Amino acid sequence: MVVGLGMMTFRLHECNSLKAKRSIVKSIIGQMRNHFNASIAEVGSNEVYQRAEIGFSMVGNDRRLINAKIDKMFNFVEALGLAELIDTDMEIMNI
Image 1 (cartoon, helix red, strand yellow):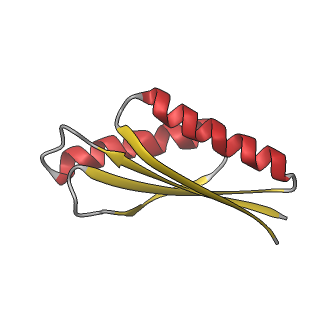
Image 2 (tube, rainbow, N blue to C red; image 1 turned 120 degrees about the vertical axis):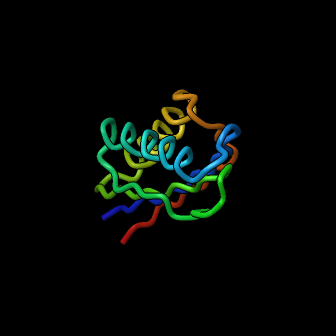
Image 3 (cartoon, helix red, strand yellow; image 1 turned 135 degrees about the vertical axis):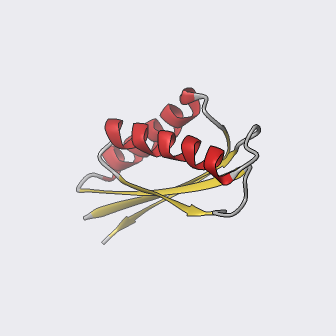
């Protein structure tokens, strides 16, 4: 079994409230869930208006396939243009 974990950090330039931040984060997470079969959640910077951290995980049986899907996910989120993607991190483990 192969487990792929990823973390994305965003800068939200025009957010002045948690309500505005929540709207953007929910939109990003919703679109990611619609396009990829992954578990996704906001995992950090919950009280900071202009920063969001979203984590996700995928499970499969082919390391190259998981790696390709994670790369596609990073590219997809950046192409959305809802927020500036400032950092990404991923890890792939064989269990």
